[in-house]
Every structure is written in structure tokens, then in C-alpha cells.
Length: 455
Image 1 (spheres, rainbow, N blue to C red):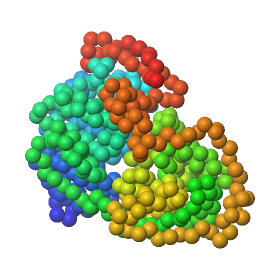
Image 2 (cartoon, one colour):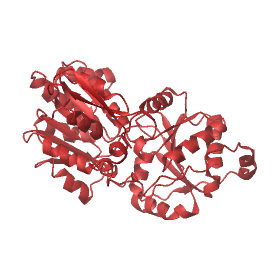
Image 3 (tube, one colour):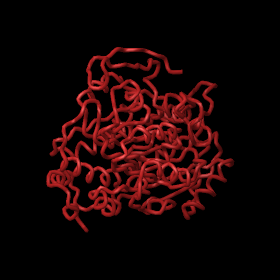
Image 4 (cartoon, one colour):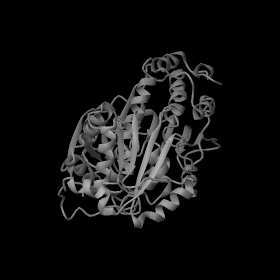
């Protein structure tokens, strides 16, 4: 099957795809869509950028439209769980585009924005709900949402869900879903812990795997520069400034292992005259949205991100990825550099490796089977670095990185295994988290506000 028109999708969906200029399905779409049209459960092993959102969205929307039923109060027919706000918003936007010619409602809920507004939107129910686990459970706990009528359930980025400590939340969700449903389970990697989680959601699934887990983008040129940790900031500024001057950099993602580190990197770049924004879990939703919008529009060519915040950043035209610090989990390197060289474009990934990170570099090269090409320091590096401004930062900006995962790693927190407000879903900076209880149960649009602080 070479075209979407060969897959049996409804005509309104094909029209929406044509509007976007999509005619040829990707490998995961060719494999997944026919099975999902038949109502089969699916186990998908695929990384971001493979087209998996359309792989589950198109056949699901087709089935929902073909079996139209009235919306039920405070409920949804299809539930998509995503680990981060940005990824949830991206999935919802894509699904709205695919469903624009159908009489189907798509809604999206996540933390960092007022929960009462989200609850009011759900009073009459929706067809498709895309959500982060923490905010979804808040809505359920306050009787603004029920999962009793879910027909299709999608768990996306399961490995990242585990990393963020959502395991207990997912087990709770599994117990609330109706037994008669279609379930789709996606993960970039499939260790035993993810397989065990998958068994709680899917039965006799069709297995679809695209791109070996350890492969990296073929069109990405990968380099490494060996440099002392204290000199990384200056080197990064010089590299980016030179690329901008030569008109070789369109947009660049810079990866930091920590939230405080991301802020420091962005401040340093700004001090060097390079527009940059930082995005991570400690930013308010308004700040994260503003940073992403500036990055997409090109007014800010550099976005500094942590691994968690970067999930869901799917912006065209990322020409360069910089690993300011090497990840201590080699698979994370594959996710990082996969942000460039998309849609047939070329890209470069440049890693800055300090002496104490060489073991991480060996792990990356072993996993990917690619030896990173050495990129020497500029000949005049020391002299040029001395000219750069020295940004000040608070001396207590200590690293908050704990083994590549959330510092609580799924323990403690709020008792559900979601530390810091359920795995990084936090209210806007300095704002209380609002809880509400609708009078009269689900579907009643009268709410009583109850304010409580999140530690």
C-alpha cells in the first residue's frame, strides 16, 4: 500500500490529509492503520518523528466517526495519555487537523493552567481527550471526568512515563478503564519493565516496530569536542555565533541535564548576544508556550531544554543539536539528535564532552554503532573566549540531576508515584494549585473552589 487512499480511511479524513499535503504513509502508518481499523490492540515500538501520532489518530478517528454516539457528560470516547504538556498539545493539534471535516470534538488538558476552565469544557463530554496523567487524575478525583465510556485508549511514550515516575498513576488508570476497549501502547524502547506495564493494558496485540532502537538519524552529522567543563559555555557561544554569522544555523536545540543548567546556558548565550530561551519543568506554562512560539517563529533561534521538556518539541527546521552535557543514559542521545535532520533535511549534532563524561561517550558509540567525529577547538579559542562576557549566576544553582530522571524517581511525592506535582506537572510558578468539587457529580457545571498548596 503506497497511499493513504489505499488504507480504507473515510473520505473526510483523506480530505484533511490532502490539505496538509500528506499522500504517502510512513512505515509505521502502513503497518499499524489496517490492524487498528479492525479494532486490534497494538504494541508499537517507535521513536518520535516516525509518524506514530497519525498512525493511531487516523484509524481511531475513522472508527469514532463510523460508530457515532452521543457525547456523555464528563466523559470521553478516546483517551490519549502523554508524558509532557508540550507533547500533549502537539498530539491534540494534530488530531484536530485530521478531524476538521468530522463532527468530532478534540480537547486537551494538562497542568500549569487553571483546572476549573478545563472542567467546564468537559461538562458536556468530548470525543477525544488528550491528557497528561497528573491533570487527568485531578479531574477524576474531583468528579469532573470519568473513564467509564472510553472506547479507545492510547498510552504514548511509555518509557518516558516510567522515567517520570508515573507507574502508580498508570496502574490506577488501568483499573478504571472499561474491559471492552481498544488499547494502543507506544514506547521508544521495550525493556522488561515496559513489557510488564504493557500487559496491563493490551491483549493479544499486533506488534509494530520501526527503526531499530539503537539507530540514529542517517542524515545527521555527529561530532564531539573534548573540552573542560568550565569552558563549555564559552565554546557553545562561539560555535553558535559562528554558525549564525555564516548563515548555517536555522534553529538549534541545546540539551542540558538539569533545569538550573538550562537557565544558566540561556543566560550565557543572551549575554553573548545570542537570543535564547530555556524550557523545563520549573517554567510556568505561559513561559514554556512563549519560548516554543518564539522558537517556531524564528525570533529566538536557540532553545535550551532538558530531556523531559524536549519530548513533544517537533519543530521544523532544527539544523543543529548541541549536547552541552552528554546524557548518562545512552538511549537519550538518540532521542536528542532525532530532533534534527527531519523530513529529508540534513542536520548536525555536536556534543561537548568533559573528561568525566568519556564513559558516557563510549556507551553512546557502543549503542549507536557510530563513532563521533572529533571536532577540535577553534584555533583562537582561548583568546576569543576571554572576550566573551561572564554572566553571573547564583552560587546555589546546584545541579538537580539525579541519574537522568526526576529526583524522586517515582518514590514519595504525592503517594501516586508522581513527584513534585505528579512528575513535573506543576502549577504556574508561585501559584496555588486549585482543586474543585462539582456539586451533584459529573456533568453538573457548578463548581466549588478549594485551594491547597503544593509542596
